[in-house]
Length: 234
Image (cartoon, rainbow, N blue to C red; front, side, top):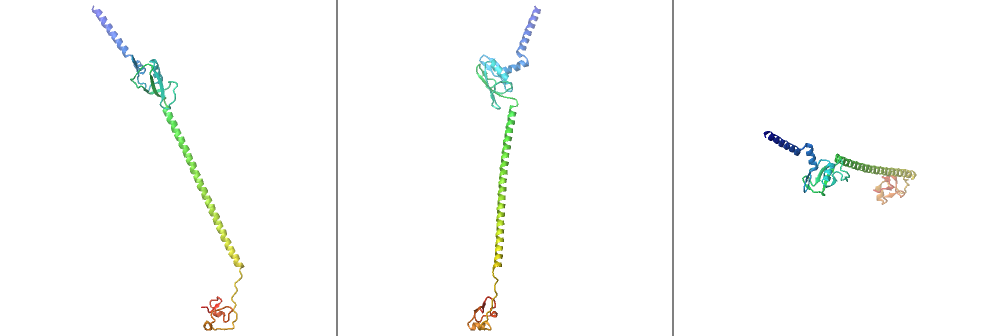
């Protein structure tokens, strides 16, 4: 009787241990369960798929009759296949109860896509800046060319004006020299012997003859002190 009791007790303990092992499972089983979610009589409890493979999430949704849609959070591209995509977030969020036929929206990205987009945008910005710098340089070069051309025209005009003024001055001097050469020489005043003689201007003035011009009676050179052709005029 005691032996049977021992065997029965040992069997009960073995069953309990096997039940505990079955309930706990392995670490791999736990991780798989966390990815596939938990089925309930009134729906499916959505696990947290953030950072996990989109392909794995889609397979879990299909297993429970749940529809899925995808949104590329980097480029907004249309996703034809869930392969090589990573879940960023999803709607409904983890812990929500999703019924069969409902839809879960997954926001996803590809590894390196954000970096590639940022690099492309930086390259585009750099190209735009380079084009703007080139346009600015071309505009500055054109402005400098216009200024230089205007300065050259101004200098040429000033030279023409200076040459014209010099030519006009030379022509004026030449004309003056030619006129001086063509003018008849000034004849010296010729004293005409006077029929009347005045010893000095006092006598001429006393006689009422002053002033006396060249050729008039009484005029003579000694009485015309300033040699202007008029004697005793002062």
